[in-house]
View (cartoon, rainbow, N blue to C red):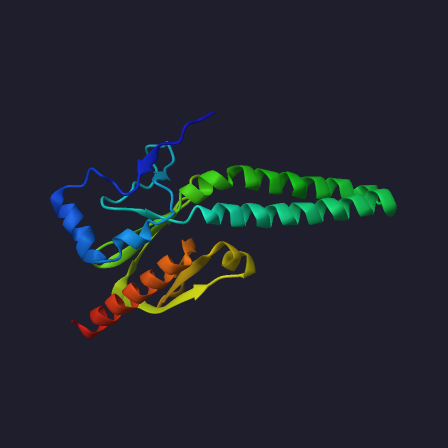
Length: 206
């Protein structure tokens, strides 16, 4: 099995200047951001991958993996039940092909979920928030604090049961919108309040 390198989070090898910059970017909230999260960020092995920026990377709650596994398992059970009804009761054997393909996709999705979840991270810098996710398909986007127009918290019934939420940033350009999933609810609220305050100060030039 191919090993995927992991980057410790937070990074204990920062220089004093980097550590100070990170502390200035999020004063007083660093301790709450890493409560109940993963401790290492997974990266692709390829040398041509999108490299991680220097500084402290925060990850999402471990509970997010369980929410995603339960959601996928529920869909798999529904697909399996429908497939059994169509083939055994209604004798529609053609359903085996699309049903089997869908079941394989769902099982594969559940198998790679742990790695996908541990590849999600964000970093608070002096002027922007950097978000990254993905191993095979990587995405890394920086959202300037001054461009944030709306910071929204959403969560569904299953999310509420596990005490997690999604934090969405809306900017003037819709293509740069970012959603950080799987944050502990207290973390999402703390981060929202911090980002709103920073964004307001940047827009007013304070």
